[in-house]
Image 1: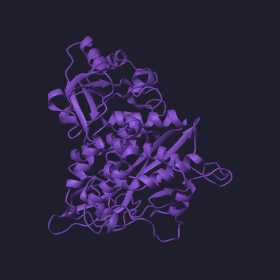
Image 2: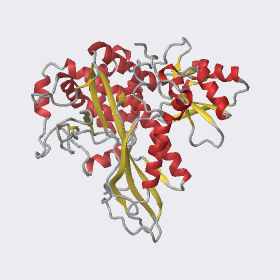
Image 3: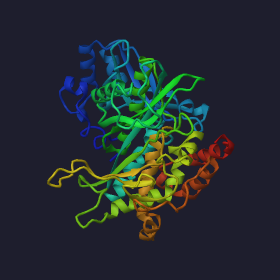
Image 4: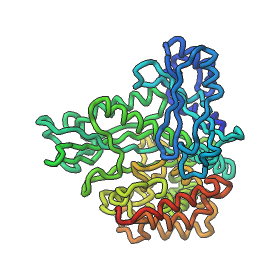
Length: 471
């Protein structure tokens, strides 16, 4: 499977979406001509080429097509861009920085926020040699996913739990909230329910798979200094191959920010909005698949299979290092150190919300049939996460777990039962410790060129240059 072949990882699992209904055939078979037809019928005025930058944020390049031929040329060939600006500190020099945005028709959607009809399409990044750009986060996560699949015959799927805070000026109607007491609250006890439900509907219409949404425990009463009331919500996405799971998180954050802006609210994905209160994690549920069968849970004998052991062991060995991509702000350490169900030691266990790696309970029907696939939850990342780089690291971690000689010993030494205290190795508590953890596994992350030469060296430099006292 080529790194640019999205036939296995970006189509069949997706919900219908508005464009699928308009085109009338599966996403995997969409062509530029199909999109041009929809554009004519829907009065599209703008094409937006969207892609992921080095900072993990969604980027946009807009076009006003002059004709059908121009429209199809844009969707077939893409356009050049400045790689040194898109991927700073990645080794791309300004003197040779041209890259190409190559659209992927199967990812197209109608922009729900544009003032005029606009077709958006997600893109790969190509270098001047027309190959996938090594420094692109999109390339890195796809190559990591491809390597794992090819060498183990196991696909790794994931989903993100996107936690976020909504903030607005408090008024006399906001009388129901109480600090850290918002879990599963419903209107009128929360003000963000309508926005959350609208976000879920928008995402499904775009073709992003969504599992559920609810209000979260975090509720922050206003202070006299700012008068802002904050409440926390979560949208949990549905399982998808790792590259698509990363894109789903970024698109969800984009939708939430747009809706908050439209409604005169603030949307914060920060790890912590105020000390002493619950923070926003970005937990990932992970599911290894072999021959279409989810292998993240216990078998009929009550034991975990080797694929689950590889993933748990790899995350235990590499979890602290992955904070370089999953916990990128000073507030990340505040969230971990103050507790509030955030993990602060390298442990794994069944059901335990203090564990770094958790095996959640599964919902079952009365006759014992499971209604959702078993998953392995990685609870360390937060809202500052770069999902593409993090999930690439997770794929490499699973490979590392597979290669670990005394894997059973590692699992035994890091397991914690649901009632035990955590007496294991602590997670890093500042950027310098993250750098130290990253340096120990750097060679594993760079195996087979997944993280290109020099990429992690520059990541280490930035971590080591960040003053610890920022925390």
